[in-house]
Image (tube, rainbow, N blue to C red; front, side):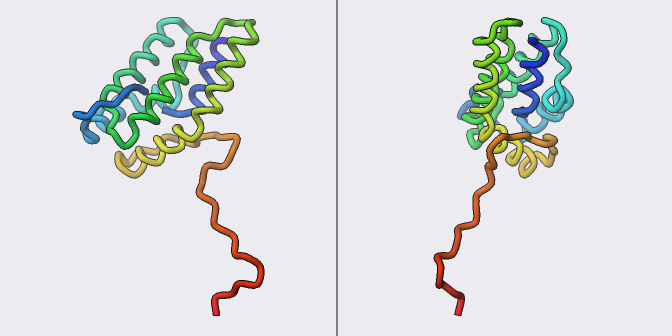
Length: 144
């Protein structure tokens, strides 16, 4: 069940606190070195859980201000999933709720990484659409 909960983390995508001295190039370089782990974590042992948490937190320390808050939400997502107690419905539910709550941040981080680092974070699966909707025209309004 822990594996299932951590798989939910992968759905959420990519860690930590960000600092005012962060450097986008350093973040992109560090992300490049950990891209496979961030995109598709293989989490079946306690050691792999620990490595994933460490990677997300280290990247969080480098997160540029543009995405620092969103990255921190993703770190919380990983931490919540890592704390899942198998067969404990409340624990599992907390992880699921955190995964849903982190959707907007996952989308924002994936876009930033694509735009600034040039890396595709892979599909970010969400329940609710997070694109900005096109405003509707009021009835009777034309572009004449």
